[in-house]
Length: 102
Image (cartoon, rainbow, N blue to C red; front, side, top):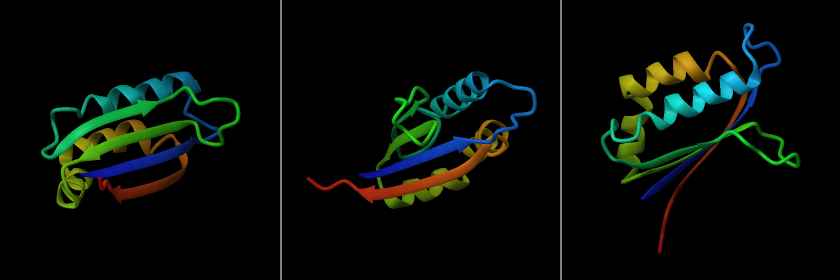
């Protein structure tokens, strides 16, 4: 299995939307991909960080394999969500992918 973790901070200017609206859109859009992407096992988005955090949104997703993760990155459904709900509103992105070993 492969974990795909992303942390984002949001832009200061959100095109008239509130941070709460943007976060809710990111969560709904990405979590809506569950069951739609081949090889995706799970996907969760956390939009309620503690005050001690320096990121505003976290994606925690699990894939069957590295190949499944690569497929997700170019899947048209994922690209549509990223282009509509994520990329226009995020200022920074940090990613960590790793294999889960038992």
